[in-house]
Image 1 (cartoon, rainbow, N blue to C red):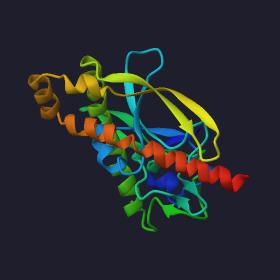
Image 2: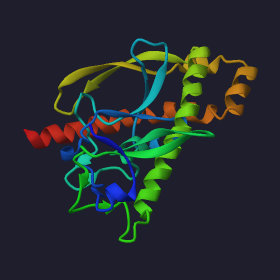
Image 3: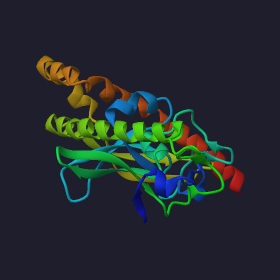
Length: 239
């Protein structure tokens, strides 16, 4: 990885390829997401939770496939859903931090080793006059949104854990071919515990803006069937 602070002097001729493809590392099984993004995700992806290794923390994830390196939304024409999660959109950019006299400033970095970085095709970072393009402004805005969403997401998982609302889940998958598999290592909302929460607890969740994302995560589980269908179709084409 070769991460650099984005600036017009070093990146005047740099372009970023935005199309989605396995060639650019988009063949991922899942990506991290945040409660404020659930509204956009729910129509397309199952929203689950994973425990962060060696901690008591959880993160929310959008699921794209059933095994490592499998993204069932990748098609020859690109991404097969109308909304692409921001953690996928933001590649190859990331947030950096720069010390200032009056504090710490968030800045935009780019991974120059990414296969998305090009000098011959893609979206320009800067105009011929050295001004940031609309594309670069959008990416900076997306990274700022991710930063703010992540702050809320940290509290969200603490609240869910505090109310014992997360439970481990096992998915038994049967494809149209008859092949069966199990998917382990994920958590989902415990609906029995949710139903028994006091009015005070529900009021706190609602006041924090967490009640709606909780129900969106529950509702998104119907998309597991969509993934099974996509995988069945893919395996049928490979046979």
